[in-house]
Every structure is written in C-alpha cells, then in structure tokens.
Amino acid sequence: DTAVSQTPKYLVTQMGNDKSIKCEQNLGHDTMYWYKQDSKKFLKIMFSYNNKELIINETVPNRFSPKSPDKAHLNLHINSLELGDSAVYFCASSQGWTGVTGNTIYFGEGSWLTVV
Amino acid sequence: DAKTTQPPSMDCAEGRAANLPCNHSTISGNEYVYWYRQIHSQGPQYIIHGLKNNETNEMASLIITEDRKSSTLILPHATLRDTAVYYCIVRDRSSNTGKLIFGQGTTLQVKP
Image (tube, rainbow over all chains, first blue to last red; front, side):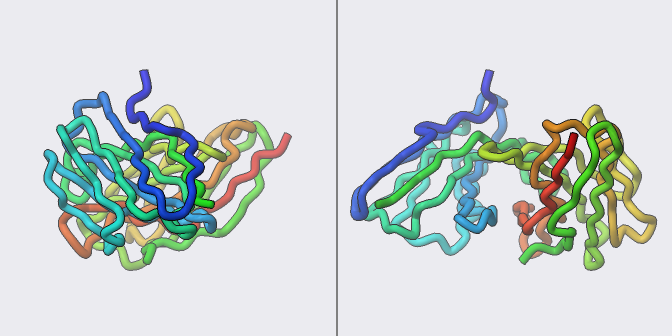
C-alpha cells in the first residue's frame, strides 16, 4: 500500500486555469506538508498542517490554497495558474514536527504540473 | 538557505562502499542530521538520521564527528539502484516547526 499518495501524477493545463492536487496518507500521521521542486531541482517547503491547522506558510502566493478536510488529507488548490507554477509538487507527512521529536517525513511520488 | 554543504557529485563503483560527506559547521546542540535521497522521477526517500551517536540501519550508516560539524553517510555495498541525489539536511532552527530545508545535494553515480 502506498503510504503517501497524490493525484494526479501528471497535469498539463493552460495559463489562467484553476487546478487541484489531492494528497492522502494512510500512516496515521498528524502533520502533512506540500513541497515544491522547481526546474533547478531545489525542493522547498510551501505549507505544513498539523491536526488540520496551518503551521507553516512559506510566503507562497495566495493563489495557492491548501485545504485539510481531515488529518489524512491535504489538498492543494491553485488559482489562475501561471507559467512559473510549472514544477513538481510533493506531498509529505510525519508524526509530529521533525523539529521537536526528530520524526521522519515521508514523501509521496510527486505531481508533475506543466502550465502552457 | 540550507545549513549544509555537500560535494555536487560523486562516483562509486558497484559493490564498493559509497562515502558521502556533509559539512554542517553551524549545527546547534538540539538539531538532528537527516539524510534523504531522491531517485530520478521519484519522491525523496528517508535514509537515516542522527543526533550525536553513529547510527546504522538496513540502508546505511551515519557517522557524525565528535564536534558534530560534519557527517558521512556510508552505503556499504553500492548498487546501480543507489544512483540518486543524496541530501544532507539539518533541521531548521528558525522556528519550532522543524521544516526540512533541502540544499543541492550530492548526485551519486554508481557505475558497473
């Protein structure tokens, strides 16, 4: 069973559209994350939710809106897509925050977003 | 910014040990050292982490110097499937959320 699963894996869309990426984890973790990997392969955190509460928002444009309906899900909705949004988006989860307990973050396989 | 420095690339012969170094000279006493790797077109995969003592698991060993300013990840018998980008990460200390800050990592190429 996939621990952290994301859908869709590939998404090609036009500028100006609105799209969502869904993420689910079956590890029973209470913290979930969205990371972005750009064309230069740098991985950067975007958001983190703990028990459905937003705890990290890394100055991401407000066109990006995460939604956590429950602890096992963290979806990413993107409005008015721009060319620069093309990237790979990784969902991840952990039990607790790595900063306090040293717990491990587990990543999904990524969602490849291409804006044309 | 990442708090670690790693060589951009390394080669290793299949079956030999791969030793990947990492410098983290500004690490503080409560910060952990994590190692992740990313195989092409996949999500980052946790390998190992440590605080002070050396650690070993089924994937690798982590050697942390006594002053904690550097560490080495050891893959004891590298295979072609170990070809990946390896990230050495020190847990962020600017907030209490503990996010992982990835640097450029080391691209390890295991050759037959």
